[in-house]
Image (cartoon, rainbow over all chains, first blue to last red; front, side, top):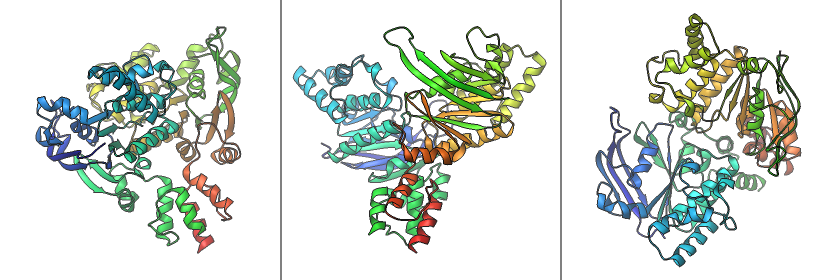
Length: 276
Length: 279
């Protein structure tokens, strides 16, 4: 699915029109095929601005952003780039276009002029991955917030992109809706899709491969989620990040020598380890 | 002086085939200076309840009184109830509309008929309460940061000096810094004697900050009490769509395995108990 996908940012600077400060101030980042990377940072850090560079919604003021070798400043490459990188935004109500579930999921493939039988099979596949099979004919307004957001993901999937960018896609959902989206994302990554997840919730990055912290438009840190947690709550707080309570418990237990730090910070694994 | 709900019920689309009961016999007391959380899953009736607290919606059955004033159809006290109980909707920054901070802030007090010489002081005081006293007053509200916009929207409700403030999901979309800032702000309001009712689906947040918690499920107030009391009830009887704090669920699982740890949602408390137990 993601074979050969790669996105490279070199020295990316970006300022919004009529502002003096740079929203991104020299960002170098490489996103590789099949990885699940989280971009973390407080409100206003530049993480959404960075996300919008990944599918050429924004182009760098300075520096370069390449998606599979295509320059995002090249207008002739835009269509190809947007087929490679799909985006899901925060508010599901702002990104659903049709009145009925299956019509919404079919919007992309229909616009791409695909044959009806291909559209059908893609829509069925996308809806089933997102747990919306059986809802094909439901009016969109009858869906819950979590279901709507899963429909937004399905609409993106129907274009079969190798890379999916989620820009705070769980921020407006309740805890159950958040879990639903995270389950879909984990499943997609398991199938080889490259995932870029923008969030400020550390709970959501435990299972991703790599974390990049952005603050003040600058990439401050990169590493695995466990290395990030190991930096300690105080440093994380300076980046506006809060260590989830269970991670703090896990750290305390590791620090006290009661737990091998190789045990991942999940309640089930920690419980099993303690009972051993 | 308190806000009292007794057996309040409310249905939408009453008398039609679409009739749905949103609240079923909810009772609740909010006292001055108290910080109350209304917690529940999406669709549990939280927002319907919030809109009853300032008589935006009126009960089909049951009774609501605010400092003795009755919120019922035809009551002549509705206007005063709406002044005493300020309601801040979800994403209140979406309702900002004026060209300057001053205009935005003066709108409420002017509409409530405050004498012109009192509007300035009321606005100053409200901005100070949300820590925006230094904001240039000619600035456009739309030029503010997300967190500032939200605090300005809250200040605009505070400008008519309510005794109760109801906030529907006030932390939605804020990062942890913004969330903590807002919690500190609410704590300050309560020290000023303002009672706060916070509608949220974040049980962890409610446990950490609030004095009393009301847990709603399908329009019923299932549990009501201090965080400790509500946690014990939740452990006995899970509520649809409301997950326990991870640390608390972990402490419960530890106890089932024979570890002697307290039923706490505080990670340090559980870790220390475990250290004593194992070490």
